Image (tube, rainbow, N blue to C red; front, side, top):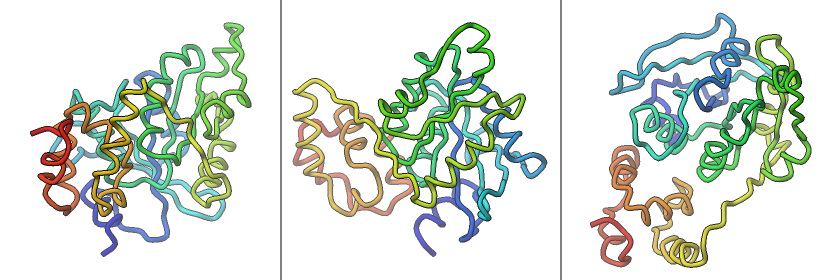
Length: 256
């Protein structure tokens, strides 16, 4: 069984080689559930995430002749895994390997939502930013420069008003284009202070190649520097990789 299929089954994603898996992420109260319901209609079901009391919602839709499985991640402000919801969202993005991730934002307070957008882009490049509530933003005389935002973030940006259906067709088309490789996002990389960047570069060099093939090495290096033991535990849970002792022995930033 391919690794991606095996990992997705652990998250209760049904095996379907012809379907693409799409993650739907976002802060609470951005209209994410409205978008989920509008895209999937009655073709959805709910349950709990494995080992958690956090609700899991899945649905399907078709676009461009392809079937998509849409997974509605818990609303969260961060992916630093300080809560069950954050852990579920982060683990799905890291280990279930969605074919694309849609991050839903609120056009009336976009700056507050971009923190999560940037965190998601550190994990995966296949990101589409959905700027929702554009109708409310216009009523408040807020203008969103979509072309500028697309250039600044390096990923497709689609504006929507999910309650009226505005932009949902374009959102589907954007998802389809990213999954098929017709659009190749190039997310803007967060650049930290020089001493942090030097440390990240050193840690990346020491991460074994087989691990780099499974997970974003730069993101992992940042978690190592943060002494994020939860990430280490999750990697051991989802991936069969060599013991992390090699990192603990070779690099001082790695947790002991």
